[in-house]
Image 1 (tube, rainbow, N blue to C red):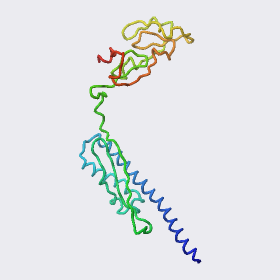
Image 2 (cartoon, rainbow, N blue to C red):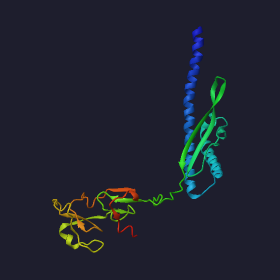
Image 3 (cartoon, rainbow, N blue to C red):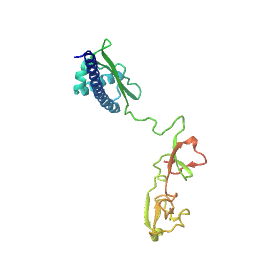
Image 4 (tube, helix red, strand yellow):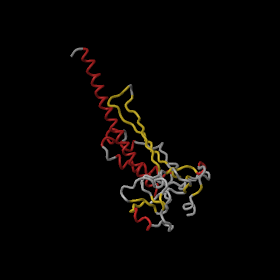
Length: 244
């Protein structure tokens, strides 16, 4: 073997070894992350049924993670200390979030600059399934309301029957027989009355008092926007949903 070969071959062998090791590190990281995500999802659901202290969450997180991670050969073989060498010391469970942060060591295939191992860190964050207390969207006395694009009033809920219309298709020759929920007759809509009715059918709603020849008429089509009550200008409150 020549002098050049004696120098080059070991270098290439080391490079090849470290390239393979790089992919091994990625495998281990994927396995650790999978166990972290599984633990985070389980804990977030657990928070919905039981209000636990931070210490209890820490114990549960470690137990759940170990149960999942110990199934993986890559973690058992290449992480220093196996699954028990993975620490959760910087994890946080305060407030509405679950932050799982782990640290662990992996050994180099050969000593590198005097170092035989190196540290890796990974984390995941999940929100606890504890719901939202501000159900009405009230903030400093200012709540969310709903308005239609062409509407003249604002609504307490998007489910208001004046916004969430129940549209029926009926024969135009029978329109005189129909009544709305208030017992009123239906009259022609001024917006679409002049349009040609090709199919002999018109559209009505339970609470409106107009019949329409065009299903896309702005009188029955609703484009709803949610805004703060303080931002509403020139509109009154809906007489139906604000009384309920």
